[in-house]
Length: 252
Image 1 (cartoon, rainbow, N blue to C red):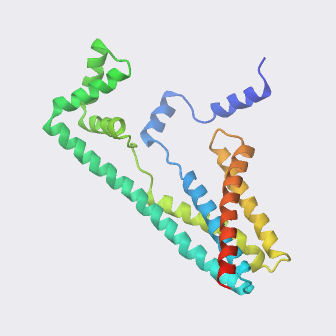
Image 2 (image 1 turned 120 degrees about the vertical axis):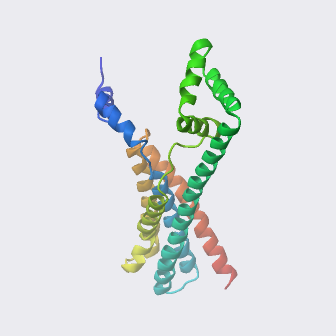
Image 3 (image 1 turned 45 degrees about the vertical axis):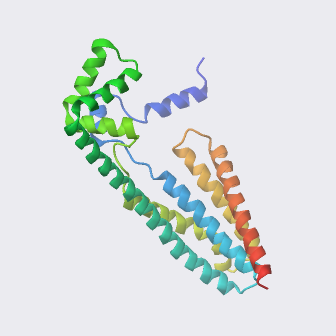
């Protein structure tokens, strides 16, 4: 007997994508989709933690609320841009690495085609191809030079077929950093009572929200994803708070 959960799972899987010939052809022609989820998670958590560190450090030093806001906003813009720039350059490096390896494999095919065919043969053999099937697979794969190169890039170097957009990765990180990093500052900007306690509560809520959002794309429950990120973020925030308190007392 099919349970409600199984029916819901089946319905969900059936609408992920169609399997008609036309739909499959169109989907493959578009190429694999790129995910920027990790950029959002990375930017969101780091934005919350670093801004919370500024807040706790300034509060520990018993400075005015104006100082919290000024230092917090400065951190948001400077550190957020720094993270985005680093992500941009890191992703661009992946693109350059792929181009360099592509050129290398092309040169190897030109200089030693039989040696490169033997590499393809051993890769297919390791997957269970034998005899005529093995030779046919090698022949088909090496018949097209570009397909041959991309096959070797994936199998020999573990390189993806396509690299994510460096600009989109950077913008995702920056947007998440600003959005989540602003949260610890809001109680001080709005002059709410017990601003520090409210800031702590809101920051922990952001950690959980960022984590639970991952369940929209990943095969894990929203509760588990939220708690996992909450614990990691809370640990980082605790270290930031402890560092702020220690430094504030040390310089008194």
